Length: 163
Image (tube, rainbow, N blue to C red; front, side):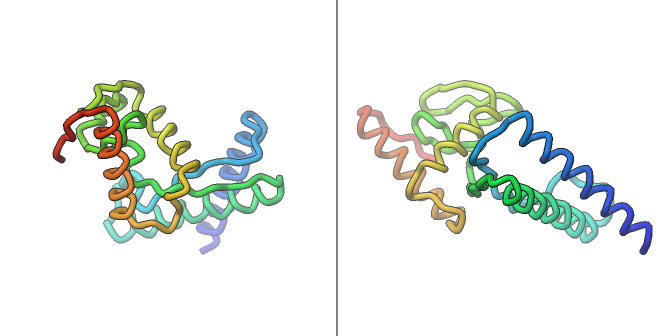
């Protein structure tokens, strides 16, 4: 039990140092945070233990970020993670095939770019979209993006692709 407490304290210290470094090297009044609901990489343990550990780490990082942001008078805005890496920021077409590794290429409009930069742009766009908030379900977000895509196709007189 003592060993576990020591490990948790060391992990918390590491997380705090990383957040302080973020605040120092990238100062901002607001940080956008993707709200993740899925597990991180497997830890080569039992499925139950993996779930417990990833949930605990994710919770600890979120807790420390919120606390340190409050101390530094920084706002945290949570953005739903649904489709951020699969959505085209130009035409709003969402498809799994849009992203392959580090490459993003829209199957509809052929927009290409680095997949992580594309996801970051989608997070930024979602932060400014009045229809998107943290409490929306994945299907609600899918509906919003589908309607944006259909509107794009109508505006540009293009035939929508079926997913």
